[in-house]
Length: 417
Image 1: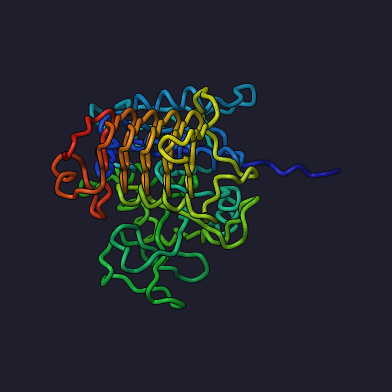
Image 2 (image 1 turned 90 degrees about the horizontal axis):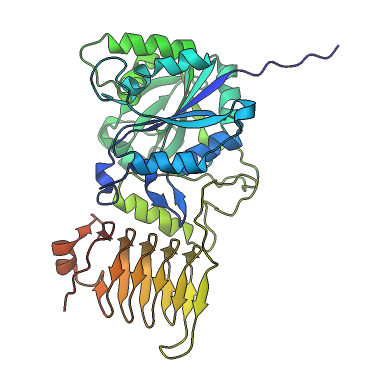
């Protein structure tokens, strides 16, 4: 008689409650996970797609700040088969533990322990909502079970000089974690044995035994001196207990992805947001949006195909190393190293270079846009230049540390002439 393996019960939690202050003005009136990315996606589509592709389709998204557009996107896009018990649902701060917002990522879980009671999972994935990557979570769960760990943290190598941006893992014997430091200074961490200039950073993806997580949350909630944070509190507690293990992201194998092409990008700042888009327009990008074996799901607007028009009155149109979404019209203009979202119009004689234009942006005749991010519905008047006069741009718009000019949704463009 054949034996049928019993599949573990898994609940997935996506943390989508952060304010996203470092992404202002893109987060002026939307939650960070709802920020558009890569043409027609939203940031939250990436973790949700990884979980759905892996077969873990009981997913709750914990929201808090400016969540309306995020809630609308989830309700319209992420409709799974309820017949099979699958769901993606957004859960706002319900104040079940008292009249307060989430005090941190750990408190967000603590305030929603009723979800665990309803689902009764054996394991709980806790993923962040604002990273660009592909991961097969099934492989992470298999290694977690084999290790006997209470919590497993997905880790990726980063430069030691960047350690202040991440939770840093010091590997011990096997996959066990010896120490975990939340955003330490580079001089306070030791590099990896095979490369002293690299460290192992947390990707913000965790896998807990459900019972272990419940005990941790109650233990953390009872402590007065706590940040109520997963990386700042829960993980150090588990490391001290000797029950925290690391999962090497480079061991993960994605269908349709060449071996060794492991991409993970935190898009917490404007420059990271800009740079990750520039990664997409590379001739041979490490992160390939065109991998049909592990797709990134989203909901697209019903728009006609992209159209490139050139009647010769302003010189022929040309497009190079760029992503053009549905509904884009490039008319007698030039587009270089840019990402154009649905409904964008680039009119006669205009030039767009190294830029990200979100939905329904219009660049008028003869206008020039360089090294910029224009949020939805921005209209660049004819002949106006953005990204050429640093003093003017800094006076009227948001300018990132690296000099990227960012305009808010519908912001009025001010001529420098």
